[in-house]
Amino acid sequence: MELSALSKVIAPTLSRQLFMMAKQYDDVIDFTLGDPDVPTPKAICDAAYNAAINGLTHYAPNAGLPALREAIAKQVSIESGNNYEGKNVAVTIGATEAVCMSFMACINPGDEVIILAPYWVQYENIVKLLGGKPVIIDTFKEGFEPDLNAIFKAINERTKAIVVNSPNNPSGYIYKDAFLKELAEMASANNILIFDDEAYRSLVYDGEFPSIAKYCRKEDIVIINSFSKQFAMTGWRVGYVVADESFINAVVKFQQNIAVCVATPNQYAAIEAITNTEKYAGGIKDVFQKRRDVLIRELSKIQELTFQIPTGTFYAFIDISKTGMNSKFFCFDLLEKQHVAVIPGVAFGEAFDNYVRLAFTLNDDKIVEGINRIHEFINHSK
Ligand SMILES: Cc1ncc(COP(=O)(O)O)c(C=O)c1O
Image (cartoon, rainbow, N blue to C red; front, side, top):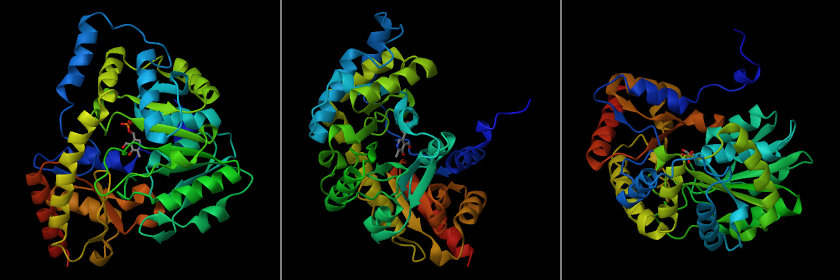
């Protein structure tokens, strides 16, 4: 059978490739996937169970359960400073489907989408699948803060949107308030939409989380978020898009044809989670803040590695230049020789071949053991 042209536009992601390869070793220390190793809080599980045994097992509305849409609107209104209602919300299969359907709702072939690097690869893939052109900004002013001048120069009449992901996967960097304000002004002045992926907004360790949403008018921004990382609910597959009502109506048309709706009991779990965001997300954040500190302590012992301390997310983006290896060689050789799985920097943009990403979604003992093995690997490679 001849596969479609569309099926050849994108390749399987490097992250998944490494994750699958890691599975062949019994003793592997796996730093690949951003999947919290803590259990979903029990009350959230109970909400889904109670829904299921009480017969709430039928199709839900395409846009999501009204009570969930209302609860999300309430929470995002608090977080963004804009006033949202249930009609501004579509419930999706994780943020992954939210990104996919949001891009489908507004990108035409030939449209350009500015993506701030390093970046989660799905943005680039979906833009390409839609016949759009990803425009990657990988020059920095300070830390991982993209150069506003470079963004400005990349804007032209075909620029449709700018993707902002802060706290950032893979760098763990949180964009500064002043940068976000200027970026929002630049986008608004040029009639460019902001895609604001806030999947890691609850995982902020040092200081406040400035959201670009507070500088955008409702019609200029699409907010994407997920229950996955905030509530340790990756496998439940619940996320959402918050935007203008007309935008949401377009997204819901896609949902009708793609999946009908998110699994109904899972939506009841999501109601329990989001109506108690502080209670659940705060505890999960504390776990990863401690893990971050353990990881940084251990990594600091390896002279050949340099890094910025991640202020958010559960990722560390490590500069491996001093080892003399490129990122793919480092990762494949490390996996083969020491059974430690990390992701090559090139999975997050071509400019990052001297980086690797570690997800610290493992317990302290595994983190210590994994970093010891990386140390040994580097020592033996000299
Ligand atoms: C930046 C970012 N956005 C969205 C997602 C998707 O999360 P999910 O589909 O599990 O909600 C991820 C997953 O790793 C991510 O890193």
